[in-house]
Length: 346
Image (cartoon, rainbow, N blue to C red; front, side, top):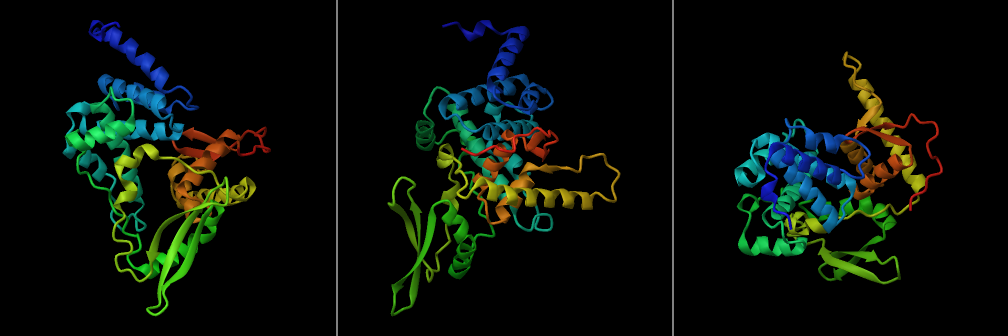
C-alpha cells in the first residue's frame, strides 16, 4: 500500500482533492456540490478533502439519497465558514455557535420552523464527527457504540435535541392533532384507533397501528392514554443521533396524480406569494422560482404529505422533467415542452 506521506506537495494534494471531489459528486445533476467543494472561500483544501472523503464513505456504507448528500455538503461548508478551523480542531462551542445561528425569534418564525432545521443539522454534524474520529470503522452502528462508550468526540457530546414548542402538551390537544392527520396516516398504512381503557373512570386510549403491506398483520405502537398528564412530556428520543443512520423516506400512499394536483396548487401559491411580495422591489430575481424548503413546508401543511413524501415528490417531478432545479434547493416549473407527462412513480 502506497504511503500517503509521499504526496505532500501542493500539486499532489490538489490532484488528490480533484479526484476525490469527482468521486464524491458523481451522480449530481447540478454543479452546486462540486463548486462548493472547490470554493476555497467556503472550504479550505484540508476541509474540502475531509468532506469529499466523508461523502465517498457514506456512499459506500449506506448509499443515501443525493438530496441528503447535498445537505451534508452544504451544512459542513457552513460550519467551516462559521468557525474558520479544521474540523478536528473544533470544540463544542464551535458547534453550538453554528447551530445557534439557526435560531429565530417568534416575530420572524411563529411556527418555529427553525427547530426542524436545527435538529436536522445537529444529526448530520454528529454523524460526521463520529466518522471523523472513527474513520476506520465501516459500520455506523459500531461507531455509535464506540462513541457512546468512550464519550468521543468531545465536541458533539451532550448537544441536546431541541424540542418543538408546538408539540402538544395536553392529551386532548394531541388527540385533536391526530384527528387532523388520520386520513393522511391511513394512506401510508398507519391506523389510529380509539378505545376505552377503564369504563368506570371514563379513561380512553389511542392505539396507532402500522399495517404490513405484505399481509394483514399489524404492529401496534405503544398505547397513549388521553388522561395521562405525562402524555407528551418526552419527545427527545425521536431526534436521537444514534438513530441518524436509520433515516429513510416512505413513498406516498395515494396515486401520483392526486398528489401532483396538490403539489402544483401549493407551488403556484408560493409563486403568487413571491410575486405579491416583490411588487414594490426592483430586484431581478426570477419570480417563478421557489425555495425547496418552503415548498416542502407547504406540501406538509396541506395535510396530504409527510416530510419524506414532500422530498420524494420533488425529486420525482425533477426526474419527470416537470420541475427544474435551477440552483441548490431552488426550483421552477419546467420550460421544456417535451417534458415527460406520462411519468409514473415506481
